Image 1: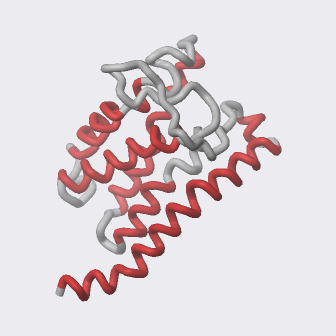
Image 2: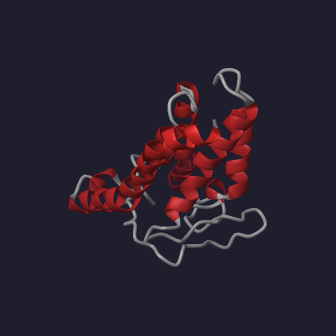
Amino acid sequence: MPTILTHPAVPLAVTFALGPGAITRPLLLAGIAASILPDLDVIAFRIGVPYASELGHRGFSHSLIFAVCAALVGACFSKLMRTSFRRVFLFLLACAASHGLLDAFTNGGLGVAFFWPWSGQRYFFPMTPIDAAPLSLARFLSPRGASVLGSELLWVWLPLFGAAALSAAIRPWRSRSRA
């Protein structure tokens, strides 16, 4: 899995790409939380749930239905986020679903149960360039952790913010063509 530091790259890049005012600060913070939320399933390790279980790491909490449910719950607070239900729902759906998508690009673990509860099958994408993060803090604070952060910078942060910067650069031309 990418680290807890990298999953927020998606809501941050989308916010930057859409430009000032498109995503309110409360919605951005909710998006960051939604991008990290699926990894709360690591608590399952502490209570004895096996990794491969549907309730284990990268199981139900990484599914698309979980992302939809998280987005629906978050959208119920759209007034607090000072924007529309639809905008909150779509943004949080993208943020929560991005978690499993990024995990499926990693080179470790058992894959992601995208289609739970209909299937417990776990999937990786054909290309898995992102180094999987160690699950222990001690291993994260080692040369292995530094290697993982470098991999995330190369395969997540740079492409996302490159695309966001391109979107920001062409925003003025898009505005003129609509006028």
